[in-house]
Image 1 (cartoon, protein in one colour):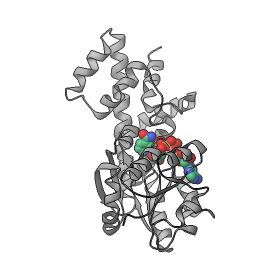
Image 2 (cartoon, protein in one colour):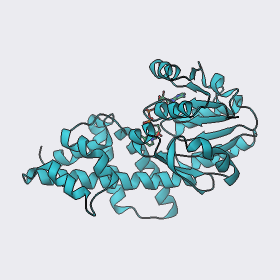
Image 3 (cartoon, protein in one colour):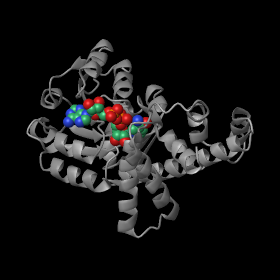
Image 4 (cartoon, protein in one colour):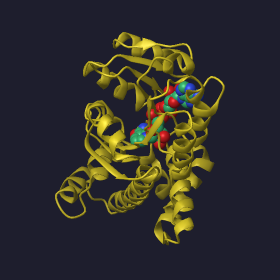
Length: 292
Ligand code: NAD
């Protein structure tokens, strides 16, 4: 008997992920703010709820995939929210990328209501969500992770319990640091190559075969060559994540000399009105600095 799922947050990531659970045979009731996303869920075989409370009331497992900590807190603690309406014994899996401390606090508050919590943020982008090959980095109790594993296997490929509550978010913060620095390095190489008059497609193909190759370079190659900055992963969200990792690193006394610099470049793009673009738009920032 598969657990009944409530899915809250059907955006770029949440919609294809929820659909993968439906394909795997789960019963999914969803709630999100946009009517068209609810229609999409219903068309895929899910049930659209009219509120978070309605979605979670009967659920065995509640999954949240919303933008940031304030959204998770509003959903968890609000009068229409999860802690007020979920049944005792339910498992809440928050797959949003939020601050580790928010996850730790949520697990404590939920335990008082008999609700178990895992933080389980993901990496792999929209393509990883669609293809169900996400990396899922979890934090929480081993027994809850074991209970969630079959369901997580319908969403991702590399699924690891990283430690106690918040540990998944800490690993996700490190992931976002690596991705941002990697995109920035690729963007600088692209501008350098183009200004040097080298064919970009040929250059990126051969670079990808060597030590400079990366998932970022593979996945973002077309974004770079076509200047296609349709998200994907929005600069606004990466700005949020650079805030999470720089704060967390300061707390533990880890130096991020390059990460802090790239956080500033992400913030600058956002200040220039590019927050809604894909994070491969870091290329735009390098072009501006190069006099384009
Ligand atoms: P998105 O903006 O496309 O989707 C967020 C969804 O949350 C929206 O559909 C919105 O309606 C919903 N939402 C917000 N507040 C809500 C509320 N109170 N009740 C119900 N629904 C609510 O964002 P996304 O790109 O899908 O990202 C979601 C999370 O996943 C973020 O934390 C992001 O950092 C992370 N993430 C994104 C990617 C990516 O490539 N896009 C990859 C890995 C992780």
